[in-house]
Length: 101
Figure 1 (tube, helix red, strand yellow):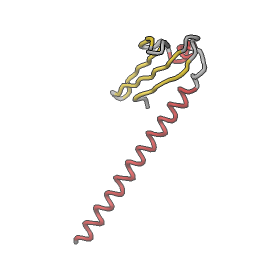
Figure 2 (figure 1 turned 90 degrees about the vertical axis):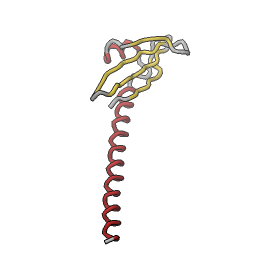
Figure 3 (figure 1 turned 90 degrees about the horizontal axis):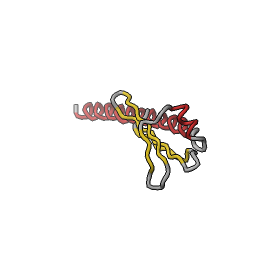
Figure 4 (figure 1 turned 135 degrees about the horizontal axis):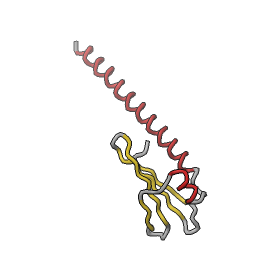
């Protein structure tokens, strides 16, 4: 009887662990896709970014003196925020994406 309980616990544990791995793999794939999509704007003009993504929700100068354009959206009640750093020459030089999937 004790061996049966141990096997049941091991069996359930295996499926819980493998299920978590599946979620992690899906999340990693979504993040990779998001990064590929946003990487295409690096080196492009801020006007191209605005044409594709629309008017940003916020814009401000960061500590480096560069412009930051912030795009916000909600999906399934989770805030998605994309920040793009724009150089003084109006070229996209970086981005950060949080909560977007």
